[in-house]
Image 1 (cartoon, rainbow over the protein chains, first blue to last red):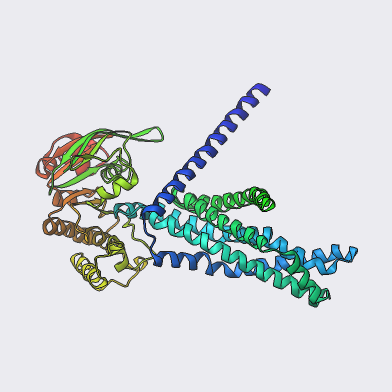
Image 2 (cartoon, each protein chain N blue to C red):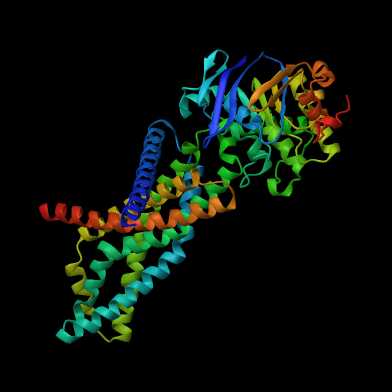
Amino acid sequence: MFASLGALMNVFVNKRVNYVLSELGQIAFLARDIILSLLTFKVTWRDLVYQIYSIGVKSQSVVVITGAFTGMVLGAQTYFQFHKVKMDTATLAVVSVSLCDELGPVLTALMVAGRVGASIAAEIGTMRVTEQIDALRTLATHPVDYLVVPRIVAAHIALPLLAMEAIVVGIGGSYLVCVFVLGIEPVYLWQNMLKYTEVVDLIIGLVKAFIFGGIIALIGCYKGLTCGLGAEGVGHATTEAVVYSSITILVTNFFLTLVMGKIVGLL
Amino acid sequence: MIEVRNLQKSFGGSKVLDGVSFRIENGESVAIIGRSGGGKSVLLKHLVGLLQPDSGEVLIDGENIGPMNERQLLRVRRKFGMVFQGAALFDSMTVAENVAFAFRNHENLTAGEVARRVAAALEMVDLPGTENRKPAELSGGMRKRVGLARAIIYEPQIVLYDEPTTGLDPIVSDSIDKLMIRVRDHLKVTSIVVTHDMRSARRVGNRVLMLHEKKLYANATPEEFFASADPVVRQFVDGVADAKECLI
């Protein structure tokens, strides 16, 4: 019995590994096509601006709310701990560094993955099942040139701007909570934040957001282009786009933190 | 000239086309018929490189498109226009934007020239003045006409029709047939029509190809084909489930 269970497990693991490797291979081919397209094809301004509007401008409300409440709760929680050791005025510095390095880009990317990644996968997936992508191809248009590249470039541009917005709003929200709710001395609070937050913290956050933007658009486009047939196929593609983007963002963030920490340390 | 040599295609272990070969000369009008799920649309998609054969060759003007990658195929596809079964209009765009899509990256054409060509194409498919409407506002027949206008606006050498009259009432089907004949005669294009509609096949095609049991079963002129006493052909032409009920 254990032998047959082992064999079943072996088959399952083999199938899963093959599936993951095949997906990674196809994403690599798509990335190659994107690079080729960027080198040879001119993205039209109209498409790019529309995608920046769709990915960036339309995501602002969700990003602002996320940034504000994350900053406020982080400020309150940090104060509760720091107050025990009489370090109240260091609260905003902790909030600021946390938001710039980690929470700003990561939470922005996760929220945008939910909104934009799903939308990209659903839109391209619907185009696939209704033969609109085949129609594009018969009209001598490469789907990567027309559908993927503008979204990738727009996401790379929009995510750092959205992350910056989340960071600013988060720090602002935290400042208001610290000063008007928790009663911390505002001048020391602000000065400590400026003292401990360095430009490099902001650069790390923006570089991360830039990379996360590419991840969201790449996975959303890939899932849309390879989605199964019918409404069920589009539904699966949408769900997988959000789940895979979110997991990839979290895992990539860990390695980016290590690598950039090392680089900054060396500098 | 289109030539298909020993084309084979399977999906998930199920063979759809098994050694199909034929040749279509420039300016010919060919109807491809066969039962539902018999591989007609699959065959059509091979001609324009939307599907790659498992084995065999598809030659367009003597050039084998099988080994070509997607970017190399773009050059070959400029020779084709294709009308899809569901029209496949870009639903985020207006009728005019759909029809003018092929001119998106033509920097040598002015906006006025593009608008003039769009109006002429819509006039040809009897839909003048619909430029600003969205595909969702159009009926099935109108959508197919816009799909045809989009396919012919850049004057391709070959126009492919994937079940152009499916799902339409007999009157609209008749108008689509007349439109296909008008496009064939005015633009002197090679037309390949995949259809279940026997009347359409008889009127539009100069030649009829019939797919049966994954192979090319018949290749004849409409007169020869529709007069055939072959039981498989008769059963399909007469549209009867039981071969014993055939009219001839």
